[in-house]
Amino acid sequence: MPTLTRLLIVLALLAGAVFAVMWALVTFVRPEIVPVTIDVPIPALQERRAPVTPPAPASSTPSVEGLR
Image (cartoon, rainbow, N blue to C red):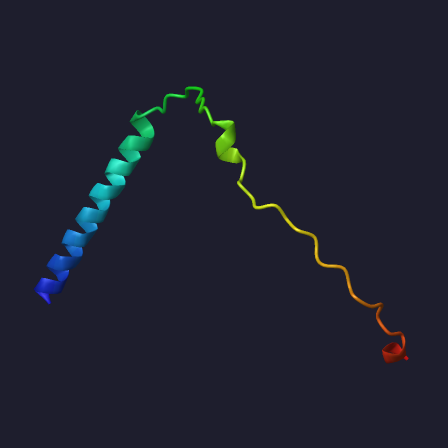
């Protein structure tokens, strides 16, 4: 049982250290807010598409008899 207790104490101390570091970062470090400008070239936004060909016209009109 002492091994389990020692393991749990070590894990608790490690978790406490992690939370202490996180708290210190939140408390003492202030982010620097600066405007960000990114140039995006226009040709990169346009896609190269193949020309679309219209479908071939139907050779005959659909029969109305099949709908009745």
